[in-house]
Length: 216
Image (tube, rainbow, N blue to C red; front, top):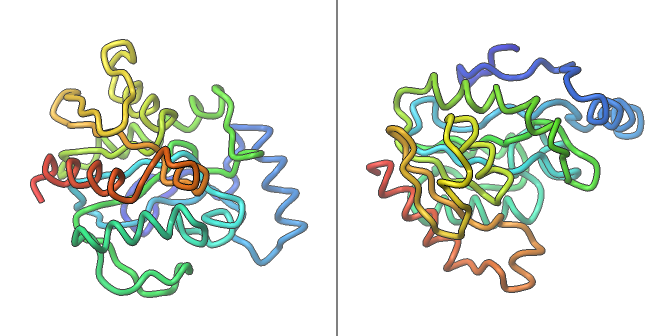
């Protein structure tokens, strides 16, 4: 592991824990040499009270730009909602040098490397979970977690040492795990919003709940 500018322990740039993800990374480093193409570090406030956990970097989103949820539709909705709820300063412009800063929250992913078809397998999720667990355990200011989708939810629950049967995923569901409150949301993907599974109002509601639990 290595230290990130956020002060959080992050995967090494050449992390070799997952053979399938390493193969894809090396392939993209040859095909798209100007892209980030590495494990994507967390982004946000080092004293965050709210942590937002996504699934994994998107191909032309975070895997290209190097910042979580930056450069794809999911990021458009996520950062717009963060701005609306007072979590950001500056303007999100789909690039990591846009000057955007987060206040009171931090964004990370359950899996830090791009998976094929954006679908990590169980072993890859398990391999990457220690980074999430370390973040949650070593960040004393965190009060709440917003999990975007079931994979993120499951990884948070397991990372905190709880049982999935005691904490079933459900949009806007709230779970007390130790000193933290976990709030669930459907992932803010284009698919979920275009099919009506998740609306902007639903997403804002879930994030607002997490904000309240964070004491913000």
